[in-house]
Picture 1: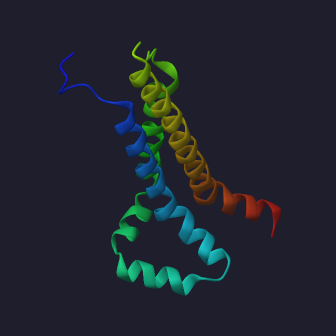
Picture 2: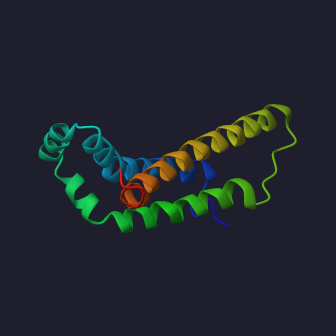
Length: 131
């Protein structure tokens, strides 16, 4: 495969972190802030950053895209058979990169789960429990 067409798992993992953070910013934080009584701060944020309204309107697409990125990132990290070079220095660097990729993926996944819970499950759960 050509070097220009090769996708590195580092880039995918960092992009996954970016997209999952987008789900948290667009959907979870506004819901949580309004729930704890900070609705005026959300009004100020949407006034300063109008793209947040667009992301909130299309939250299903945001979550779908970031979920797909999660699956791709998980495949790069856990599914593909990646081997590190035999050279000691390059092998250590490769192993450190794998460790950091797993940490970033875990952070991305936890952010995505928090965003999904706050956006899709929190209100039905609150209504069901009659809180």
